[in-house]
Length: 293
Image (cartoon, rainbow, N blue to C red; front, side, top):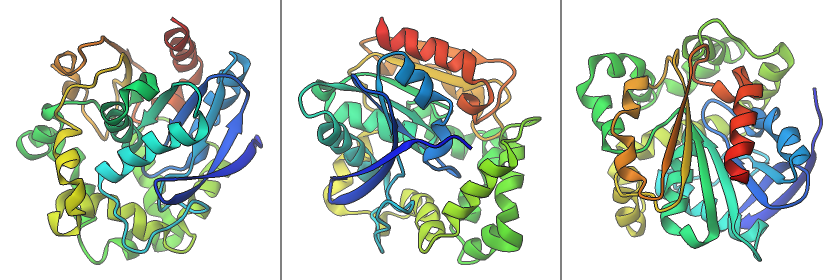
């Protein structure tokens, strides 16, 4: 298992721990669920070799980053985290942000909050636009893919996910990226993260705060309403696996309307939800070319 330099930084009131490689312009890499900072183990060395400083933090609630007891875990808080991380890690010049899954949502929001601090963004697996949220409640195929979001609202969710050594995560990864699985030691490291005190509750809290306004912080309400619907005022490259078992490829349709500064879509035909891990060579080549263009 490849080892990376580690560090920590305080941003938006949270102490974030991160993996790091290289020096140069910042590329902040934000993971999703069910995942952690090693999600970008293939991107960190490639970005470092290309002349960038690649930093992959553990998101709020994912130890060793702080696990706030009551969050908030709504995506407006994640967006503020991402913008604050760019400011803390690259105070003298704008940086780039690459987000996967929940990290993609945070990336869109950070670019809306602080476009002057972010040169370009790259996202994977979760498109931007009202069609994404609409699909969850109007598209039967997407409802089937999103079943876990509703199950996570139940008080039994922690027990279900952690049962039999977090076997649930193995099944989820298999459903979301059909025909592919990470190395056994990588899945063991992921489960070790979820087994840390408070992490599972925090990770499920992302979904609970998403659907339950009573859990959301009132002062973030305006930002919460805008993140997935308002335009993103920086250039964007989005990756999506054609076989994604979590978010249907049809949710990419109409995404261009939200990117006045330009949008590139790259669909990888033989990949699923964890596209950047499944096909790292193809992702890294397009990623680096986009950042340098």
